[in-house]
Length: 239
Image 1 (cartoon, rainbow, N blue to C red):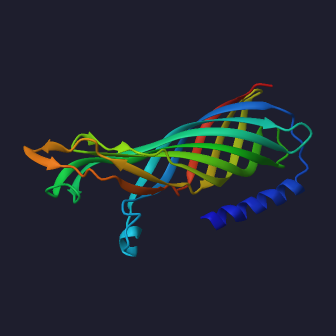
Image 2 (cartoon, one colour; image 1 turned 120 degrees about the horizontal axis):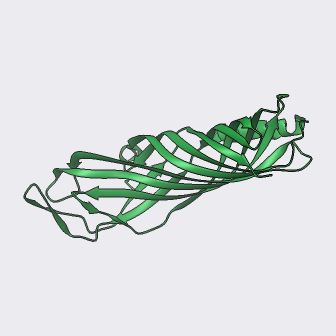
Image 3 (cartoon, rainbow, N blue to C red; image 1 turned 135 degrees about the vertical axis):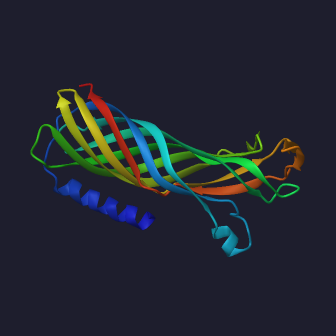
């Protein structure tokens, strides 16, 4: 995934040099809904066994919201942007939990929250239309993550606040409904990964009339949000 992102970034830089379509200077603000196709949760990232380290649970169909401010540089065919999103997916199911005493099938809520904050640059692709804009771009991002784990109603407390720094590439399509108002569709490629450390502060809980002892030692999980990200929203051009 990271090699693919770097390859697309190289294409974006080349397009920026070739593009001669100068855009009117504008400052725009857009709101969008987001969909991320998949992610992975590795529950044994520190295991000496390679097989255990590589085991993961897929967390699919992740929804979120986002906002972006974009400024078109006067006299040039590119823009700079600052975007922020909130993604969250928590799945509730009954599953066998091996680290409790005794091992037992228990109700488990598991997932993560992720806040990407991305600084980017976009190159306008010449289309010869005042109503349609196509851009390609990329940039840097900070990804603030947290794991969510609740067993039999008891939620594990996070011991750290992991932040991952990485790159992203994107393409967007704007359609001007009327002057100052547009619809935007976009797709982003990124590969944030973070390791979360949690612990149960409550020693035990009741489930089905049985006392279940919870582990007191901290435990870690690695989350990799490597799915495609799609966005659809509306925006305004402020000037």
